[in-house]
Length: 158
View (cartoon, rainbow, N blue to C red):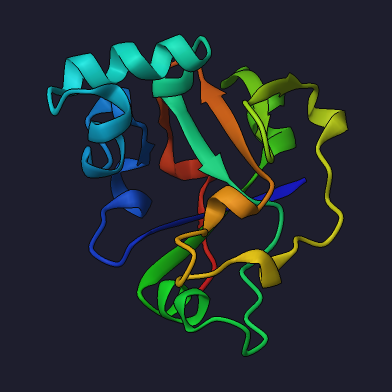
């Protein structure tokens, strides 16, 4: 099963792999308010209170962003980020994955890889005006045992 991850254009993912928050990758800004701290260690502690391994997880979606003229935010995001993908089956076969979690409307919950829903995502729910982006889209967290996805598994999509 191919899964997709969007990253800032300036990155070294194909050389260094895809890091997670616990491995120093990612901006702390989206988590400061929720964690109640700007300290990276405190943010990791907060992440781990959500579910075990959250700070070692990469966030993925099951399809590429589909912009149909509904909200400019999606188009801008896709144009300003680089898309990568990887085969989940390869990661599982090689023992890279610890667990998989799904995030929809409520709190994240664990799923088996075979339970990943690949039905079309409701991109029309994304709204810059309402401040709703990936929170409106079913996405998954792939918890990596080491907190980093080696580059040999990663493919640049565009």
